[in-house]
Length: 207
Image (cartoon, rainbow, N blue to C red):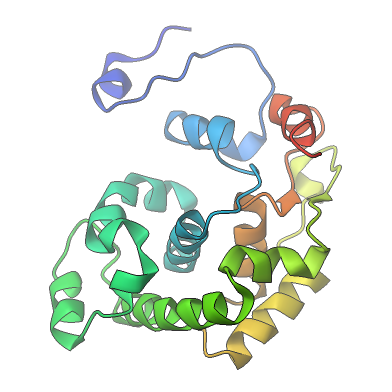
C-alpha cells in the first residue's frame, strides 16, 4: 500500500507492509512510533523525562492527540531537558498556557515543571532516573507475552508501587495507569502482543 501524499508531506516515512502490529497502532500517525520507539528499553534520562511529560499530558486524552503535539511539547519544554524545565517560573507557565502546540491544561503544565524538579532529585540520589526506575525490576525487562490486545492490563502491581513511591517524592499526575503506560513506552515492560513483529525484535534486544 503506497503512503498517502498527505502523510509523506508531514514527514512520515514508514514503509507499509503486511506485517502484524499491535491493534492500537493501526492509525497511520501511530505506526512509526510503534515500529521504532514503543517498548524499546530506555536508559537515557532525557527520553525518560520526555515520556513522563507526554504520558502525564495524555491523562484523559488519546495517545494520538499527544503524538500530534509531540513537536510542540519538544519546543515548549526545552527539548525535554529536565534541568531547564525545573527553572520554569510562573511567567513561563503563563506563556505555556497560551501555547496552542501543547495541551493547555494548567495542572498538567504545573505538574511537568514540578516533576522536573523532583526528577533532578532522583538523579542526584540514584545517579540517574533510569537507574531508579530499572531498579524496580532488577534491571531486567518484564515480558508480557499477551496474545491479544484485550489481555494487556491498564496497570499492574509494579506500576502501583512506582506510582506510590513517586508520589512520596513529590511527583504528580503519575498515577498507576499513567506509570504503566510509561513502563510500556520505556521498554521496562514489553507489552507488544506476541503476534506483533516488534515483540520478537524487542525480545532480541535483551542481553
